[in-house]
Image: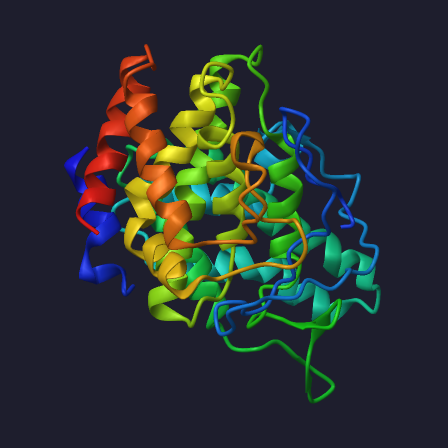
Amino acid sequence: MQHLLRRAGSSNWTHTPVGYISKFGKGSSTPRPPHRNLASTITTVTPKRQNFNTSSTMPQAGLGAAQQLQQSKQYAALSDHLSSISTALDKVIDHLSEPVESCVQSSANSDEVDEHLTTTWKAIIAKAAETSFKDASSSKLVDVVMQMQIRPDVKKDGSAFQVENMTLWKDLPTFGWQMRDAWNLVPEERSDQQTKDHWINLNAFTASLVAAAEGKSNGKPDFSLYCIWTVRDGLEEDLEMVPEFSIAAAATWFVFAAPTIQKFCREQKSFEGKMAKGGFEFRERGWTGFSEERWQVWEERLKAAEGRVKDESTKELVQQALKAVAEN
């Protein structure tokens, strides 16, 4: 797993209203994070989003892909890309974008465009969950998202086409909303191992995406709040009660994004209201986001977790996380 740490610290990586309720019952109802650059400011504000239909015609089997999604062009393109060493990134982006762009030009029905766009994002999220964080090909998915963000804007009638007031593709419209929906699918302790693995993999992907975005595109897309949510569940509750998969998911953030997380802590990047408040064990600290105090707490809790986890793969992840933290 040494390549994981190199990826986290490598210079190459300079490269709602749906409520978030902790599985421990101590979370708070919060709106979805907005899909815009939050890294440029120290204190962020989260406006309420408009109602959005994420399309009931494309169901998702947990974080993995349901059969209908597996049959989509977008999912097939990603599957081919991850299994091939020769598929050019630009070609994959073309395949992913074609259903959406064709629909924009041929249809006046915004719901149809939304549906194709939703399928594209769900395909990326499902493949991220299904692809082991130990698999080197998982980094290809991060490259896909970053490259889609710089794809030329789609034009219609001489103007850049927008979905929910977001420009296609620059703003990755509704990708943030689909990611927020995925975070509502956090497993339970009784969930099967595959479901837990999917959650860990998705967190590793998101951590890698946050690190890449911070280095390459001024923090866009910004999913740094998701770090707080996952690490809070894994390290800020009573460790005797925390499922080991939650500790593993928290650890991936440090394995893949420790330098970026520490940067946020130095800058005291914060969020509106109680979205980024401390877990139950630290509920009186008054935290509103990242801070150097919280970074120190996380390191201490990782050390404590190392001594209690029994699963060998989880213990290895925690050890890798501690090494990444110590190097920053």
